[in-house]
Image (tube, rainbow, N blue to C red; front, side):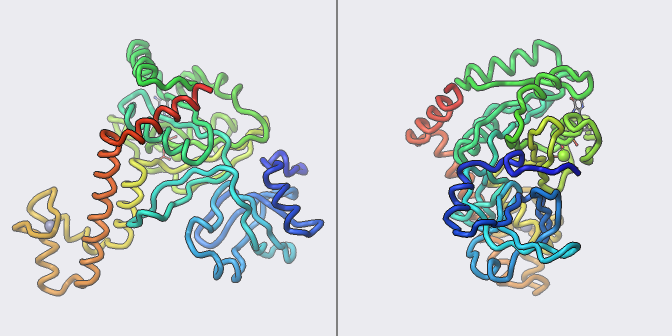
Length: 355
Ligand SMILES: Nc1nc2c(ncn2[C@@H]2O[C@H](COP(=O)(O)OP(=O)(O)OP(=O)(O)O)[C@@H](O)[C@H]2O)c(=O)[nH]1
Ligand SMILES: [Mg+2]
Ligand SMILES: [Zn+2]
């Protein structure tokens, strides 16, 4: 592998200024390419290598959002060849992409750090949704990156449908750049390539199955990422499971992401699924599909609770978390409608995209 420079990996004066305050002349730094539980893949001047968090860092970092995520810059000690590097510090992020974490109204889940542009991908075939697009725009703005909108699968719709979707975006007052492409006919792929600059980081987000990994494979020119055929309605099944930083030939850096349904709420429900699989398994046997498992007749969860097949405290936590997640969704919807502050926020987002 040819020698990389830190600049080519996205290092800039923002990080340089932090490095100087650390007071050491030669601090080995690297960028996080992938996080796999407690193991990380880093990329530095000598290429890719594995690392872990130092015990001290683990101990001192109080919240999950302080832990390194893809795109972060870290200080890392490299004990020797074939050994894990040890991460001592995570640099303050210049920008980030984040969403509300499960069951917590304050904590955020980091999606990616230090991204310059977030490419919001929607497929014009079944996936296009203006409200969701606006929510993505708000999320991108919140983290300080610049949004780019990309409509995929143009081969599956007529020109009229596509034109109508673009008109809907414009009528909503969103004036930023909207790119369109088809991975089948390759229409628009070169145009997308031409807007990616060396040393800049582009993070792809959007629902599962819209073609994020397919585009990145096409940009790389090789199948570096898994993709999977989706059902007739375009519904995906979460082929990508990991966030990953990839270096393109032209020097641009791209981050692939697993599909997101609705951030915030989705984050919460994902968390519920992982920790409460026993309750969710029972819930499939409830009489009503929209059972809240609190009072309904024929509720299999309540029955299991009565028989002590489910722990009472575990059940209480589940209900509490569910309520918080619903509360969050409601408050979000209400904000959208009533809160004038939020209206102004949306306007400032749109203004920012115009500028
Ligand atoms: N017709 C058509 N199919 C496409 C296009 N782009 C991608 N696909 C297909 O859509 C399916 C899903 O593509 P992926 O790239 O795996 O989607 P993804 O967004 O990475 O999905 P997740 O990893 O689950 O988030 C694959 O079968 C692709 O071949 C396109 O422009 N047109
Ligand atoms: Mg994918
Ligand atoms: Zn129930």
